[in-house]
Length: 358
Ligand code: GLA
Image (cartoon, rainbow, N blue to C red; front, side, top):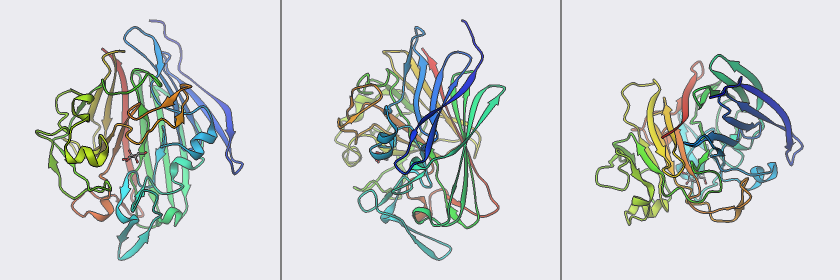
């Protein structure tokens, strides 16, 4: 195999509607794997990895233009915060103070609000490391932004490693007690962006339990066993096998849109959460994380109205999301692992998406 040196380059990508300049960084590792990341939303707009024959394809859904990311994106490739996933009735109470967020998902708050971290322009710094190339993004979310308390200083490091992984290191500090749950919302299609549905991908998720939801996708509080349900991915199974199940949870989610409680051996070490394999291309993705859970979403709300970076439209199921996170609605559910961050403490999580072939 010919290897080159890893590299990073930068170009002007566009200007937001409000006049902010957005840059695009191209990270290339020693094997020619290439990730494009823009400073708007910290979005991974393209990720080119080889198949079993060494042919490269972009394995994430995206758009061709900034305006599309600004106005119509279902969070393609984006950094999501302050609170990834839903907060029930868009409200929570911390230290006796009630906070009210915008309703942007029926009766609930979703993914940090109307203008979440996915729509902010992040500051960027190149970071070349021994095992690859990196980009460090930072954003200061002011006290009260989208209804959340505290000035929250957030840093997200993206590293493209020479073993074909994207490592994402999240950290945050606050000056007032607040809640934080950061994730990345890439839609993967291992057969390639625009290649059709992901229904033949084979999924394995290291979770004995998941959090069933109500009709508005807020956890009921129960940690239910996956045994005997379409949510049992403890052994690899093809997505299509369970996708059309009449299980009440599949009806609520319009497919898979559920938080899996990961089986963990340690509290905060990197452990493998999932593996997704596409038999047609031979590409596989391993998900490693320090987080306690992962939302597995099969792109159920994608409806054929978006023209993507592939040049064609995206339909339901054309991508899948592997959103490592804390459980949805944790600020309102005292039996869930806490998402509270206090002044003086540092929020720190890491997730790795590693690409292999078989
Ligand atoms: C998450 C949610 C889904 C949907 C997408 C964005 O994955 O769980 O219900 O809102 O984000 O479209």
